[in-house]
Length: 141
Image (cartoon, rainbow, N blue to C red; front, side, top):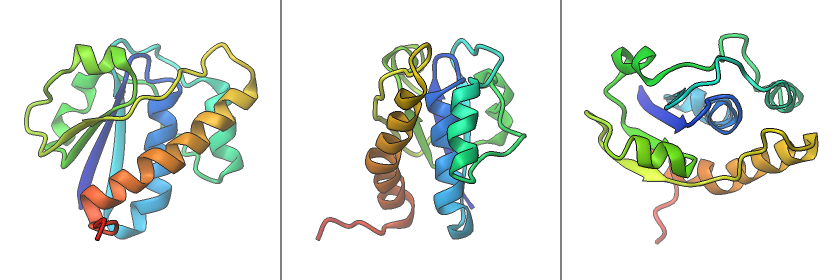
């Protein structure tokens, strides 16, 4: 089983979306994703949950959590920061085999369509990278 950790600031929108979409796309291929926040909000944004429900990717277990809550789940094969604040707050994650940054605009406080767009961008920009890094599907050759 290969493990991905997705980090954000509030762990209420982008990282939750990424965690769920990675699990949906690659769970049957032996990849599991987790998410956490450098300053978690303590809640999942209802619009993020709605987007995931519409994609059949929602799980009631998804929740906003601090990094220390997932430390025991490592080591992680891949750590992804999805916002600049988390990238700065967590420049190095101990035990990670590889750490990357792919930033997404925060949809929090914006209309529902912004959450749909963020999920689409995660599917287009992040999922291929996770697949290439952990499953070797996109060798670029």
